[in-house]
Amino acid sequence: MAATSDEQATVVARSASRTSDPAGSGTVGPRSEQALRIDEVARARGMALMFFVLTAVSLCSFPLLGGVDWLRYTAMGACVVYGGTCAYVAIRAKPDEHYRRLFRAFTVTAVIGSGIIVYYIGVFSPAPIATTLGISFIGTSSDRRWAVGSCIAGCAIYSTSTLLIALGVIPDLGLIRGPESPAIQLFAIVMVPVVFLGTLRLASNARRTAQNAMMQVEDAARVVQQRDAQLAEANLDLDKALEGGGGRIGRHTGRHAGSWYLGPVIGRGAMGEVYSAIHENGQSTAAVKTLVATTDPEQLIRFQREAEIASRVRSPGLVSVFEIGALDDAVPYLVMELLHGHDLAWFLRKAKQLELPEVLAMCDQIAAGLRDAHVGGIIHRDIKPSNLFRHEPDGGTPAWKILDFGVSKLADSQGTLTKNLLVGTPGYMSPEQARGDTVDARSDLFSFGAVLYRALTGQPPFRGTDTPQILFDVVYRSPRRPTDLAPTLPADLDLFIAIAVAKDPQRRFASPIELATTLHAAANNQLSPPFRMRGQALIAELPWGGRVRGGRASNRDLG
Image (cartoon, one colour):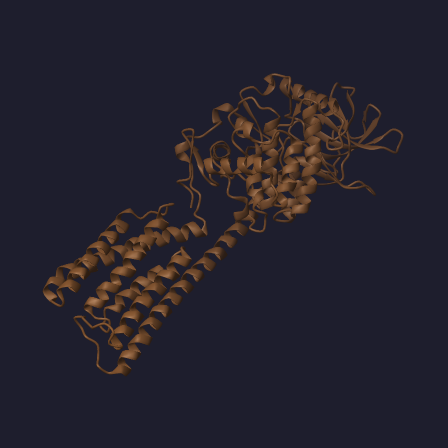
């Protein structure tokens, strides 16, 4: 298979469609832990409301029930404190960073208050039933240790009080007194705590089952998203293949381009055709790109610029250009290295994602090619999977190369050809490209970071149903956390990606080599402190899946 420097998948959109209204953004679905937290808070508010009603009824009833005065007043005080806590939880509980403290206050007042109220009503009465209701909620909390500790404390208070009453150490002052039979008392002392602990176990199992179910759903959704991404990329390449005409006779087949004899067409792009070619010496082969006949002077200028840029820098990571010229009828041509193998998009269709060692090897070689291009004053502006090619020469070592300099820019040029245009591929372009602003080498680093995200996670970082939505996400939204999509990845890769696709160019990596070196460190969970702090700061400012709004980050849409 031969590689072409086609521009078929390249989007060049008018600046009128640069961005969308931020208010029109979609939302990101909740992750499993956050979804469980939201559910827990909703149940906490419901449970608090129910116990508020119970304590209010009890508070009104206790003055009519009699009993020992000091104990009755103490129980009424417990109702006031616990009822007030329940009211506060029912009104103010939210799934935020303050919920844990609120939950702990809720459980402390519940454990102490229930102990006092049960002692007043009677430890051998039906009152402990209300305690099992509380345990059924507390046991499902995400604050696992505190939940278990609170439930055990409640069991200990009940067991201790009933045992002391049974032994005659303290009097039974309850409104409903216990039986005189020691056997019945022992039965209650043993069975009620067993019921408490059994309820705790069932509640814990219920949460664990819910977690497992949501993880399975999330895994299934992840697979579907990965397949959708692969299908979308396959459709793009199918369109390219249908237009390519590989192996067909072309309009210039049989002609000479300088010292090269043109064979069949191996690809067609937006601007030209690519032919396999053999040198007149009969030994060397190459790919020859010719410009399709056009009256558009901009296409001719762009073709000439591609030729100039591609021949300006010699690098193992870039496609070599051997000759530039024009056919007899003034059709310009470009003779370049004939590649054998597949592009990254092909590999990502065959597998959901690449193994980490494969990504590291690819990154090293592409980073070296980008470095050479940038040193030569070239900004590629369209780094994407289909423009990264794994060349597999006969008997040689495979090597990754960067293709398609058709929309590249010389760093010292004003770029008037693409002024007021969006140049690049939406899902992989940088925010400054999406806004139509001036770009520099750091724009290529953002695009390469987006490609690495795709290779590591199996999904593009920015997705949407149409170009405006994708461009909005590029400019305003952070992608999903990489380790949420690929949980086996080292945790430091989250920080690496946060830097690589930072919205602010000044906070990205300074060079391709720095990017590649840092990727190796992140792959071993050995990020240096400066990069670790930078990544953490970026995530704190714009959380994964969060949205920039009015110059500030918001994670309101996060699940």
